[in-house]
Image 1: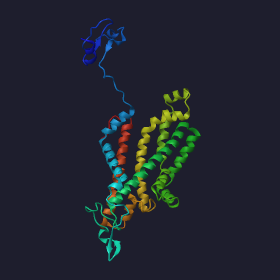
Image 2: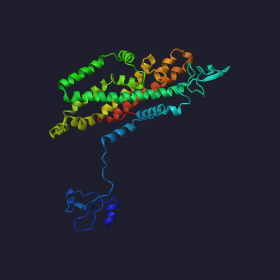
Image 3: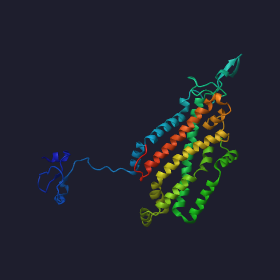
Length: 347
């Protein structure tokens, strides 16, 4: 057997004593001491059979991909948000376009297209002004996605900073920050939101997102605090402190990466809560103001028309329910995928 065949034949494990060209075919010898040869290069193995190490995120990604319900919800949610982002391309009409017709040389609203039921021309029907409900729903998805994602990012940053400082330092800092968190938790959320939106204003998606993020960061703060309280006693944190690492480096380099899993799950669920709150405020007339399209505002416009014009409430309401359900299923999938103690992935 040549030297080339020993390197390319996957079924051959060659152990050659120094100064010889003889190769031993078959399995490993029964006595492991026979492998103790003087030549370090005597153990010849097939190239490419090395074990490829996978990171924790690679395992989490594989576990999430096996969660069929969460994966399907992610695909549906991405499709809904893409439709909202490209609403100006997909929507057949503008969200503020009112159909007009000429009557005796005067331009008036086309009454034939007012409160029109769903048809091939208007998939979701029209409202009391003749505007296309399908187009307004697409633009409302864009508004809800903007508010939800912005609230998720801002509340995650606020909650991570407050919860991380409280859990890492403990003592009076923990008491001060957690009592502040408890104060926000005791506030009646909807009443505070209605009052704040009345006096501070929430007419645009950015203003409403800032208002929501300032009130719903408490859940993420408590999650991060609990994780930091357990992580600060770990051996690697003590080793980093003994090596001379500062507090900021320990929190950012050693503790925060091990808290990303719970943070991601909490942030995902926060997005769903923000979209629901935006819809509630817009429905009550304290949220995003016209002419900006919002799903809650569409429900508010259709509540007075009665059951005869069912499409004005049904389609925007179904879109809100579908978005929130998808976000909750994604959160469940992320929780199962990022939990190392979870042995079985629920489909």
